[in-house]
Image 1 (tube, rainbow, N blue to C red):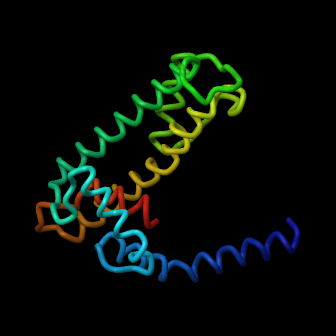
Image 2 (tube, helix red, strand yellow):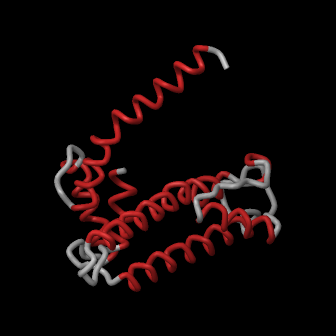
Length: 181
């Protein structure tokens, strides 16, 4: 490795260490429901999403309810992504006329993207239509990462609130992570 490679690695590590405190403080404020610099823009959107979904940001969930919500959300994501791939031949935004993805490959891809592994055993533009890439894979790139962060936040709350019966609200954590982080 050249000296420039080492300098680049050291610079990256230095920037990463410098950002730990401010980004950690920002995420603490986001998941605590405190005001951030993005609040004037995102709070109306956040509240609108809560009203639309019937979620109350004040209502916390027991760990079992939180886990069930997360599992159901990911199951629906898996089924929708699988269906999009299997039906892509008859769906719009398929100008290349791509046929349905093989069942095993569709399941493998759906499972990979909902778990944020994003392992691809196919040629992107030669296998997936625009609709599948846009409404399926891209959406999962965001919500699977948000799910992982929400679970990490719930775990931290579980340790911090040892005597409390609730660990937050999955839907609120998912929404805040997607919008703010």
